[in-house]
Image (cartoon, rainbow, N blue to C red):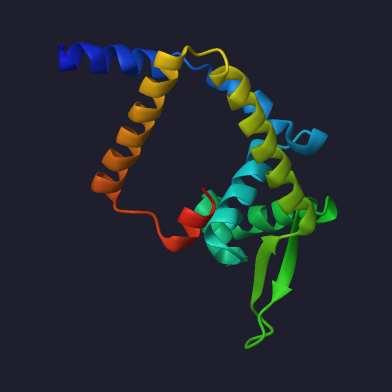
Length: 156
């Protein structure tokens, strides 16, 4: 096996995924068209938990005023909620509301269903090779970046 040639082919295959189609599919979560900014907020809050507005703005690389406007619109749609800090009422954290959790759940379910349809098209040999490759990628990622924490493990 020529490892560099196989690696190049694998990278070509992975690069052939059409990001435009993926993003259009992703934006249609729960039947409502979501902006990429709204998706970024939901994914950030899902990963990091409730954040003060300043930290959310920093994570999104926007001004605090812009983040406030984005959160206002998302709050109106029931995707996020403002939470007061019990220890300091001046601190307002932004967290995922029930509508945002439902949206993420629908998106995860639709993604899993779509992937299952694609996987159903693989031969047994391709399926076994793909699983071995994904496990190898996970091991490589963990070796390079460290193992995921317990919260990340629970969401797998």
